[in-house]
Image (cartoon, rainbow, N blue to C red; front, side):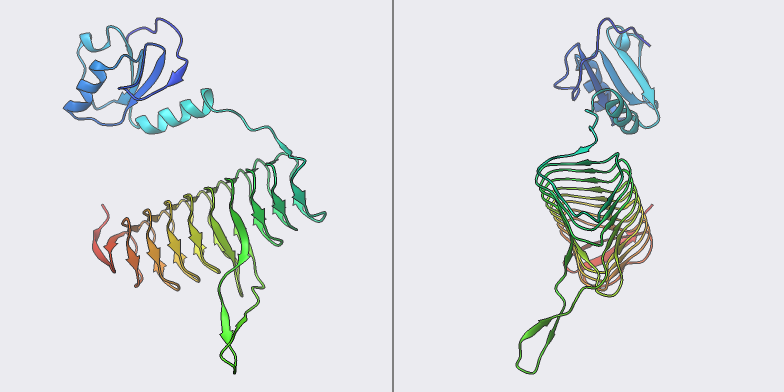
Length: 283
């Protein structure tokens, strides 16, 4: 459909695009069609549910696909993303007993304790990983994150003072996890804190000790999850949500933005509010 007259050198929104740009449109309504017509982009990825006339693609190439966002993501991964160079920055401090695959990237000023780190993992600068942590393959950890610090678990003694309860377990980060900047993931007291395969943790999140997060979850920026929680597979925790310790969130459940969750939420339910209430079944 159409012909590319030159090179595509960058990616931009339809509004900001020029003739050397790959662009996109995720919507399918009439406003989307008008947006595409007005765009100066030479190539636009858009939904195959949209209908176009010949005049719409006379001066541009339209790539019609079922999932425009996914196709754009893969195009950017292939053509517009800098590839990490494996190696350990000389300013990083690595415990001599750490087991680190040779194909990893560890950035400046990191501290890596007696840990295990798998192939293809990228750890950006100023990350602190406590001893005992296990990190899988193709994990990305952004700057300033701390993995494996003890949580807040204390016992009050006869004098009314708090005594630290030792956290004798650790943290397991499974394959393909993405961890944003300045995230805190606390080690377990009696069993490991676990972040399941493919899960994404947004910037400034806090994951309490002994919590188990399932596979392919989205936990968005500034969310706080208390200790000993259970988060099911494919759950979504929206930004600034707070989940009380010991709570369970079911598979495919969604917690709305800014919610305070004080009761467990069943599989596939949408809940939000302060305190959070179940609104409906997720379709």
